Length: 109
Image: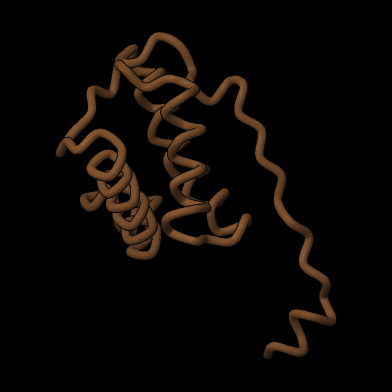
């Protein structure tokens, strides 16, 4: 991705995926006390546990949590396309963004 900055990707995209990678790495360390996890072993339980970790340990709001899960899902889809993962662990995952009231947003800014 770094080599494609300026050609379909931006520096911000790279940063967003690096932050997501750091959250996944921290989750693996927290949950499995390991430095890595086999990509092929990803399953729905891993996704649900990662979501719970983002909510409970990281204390992220719903939409922030879903943003990181969405970024992770993009990486997983690439792994499925390359047949590194056989089944989509996100197939049963449902996340719903929280609607933010416009007037509440304007009050904060």
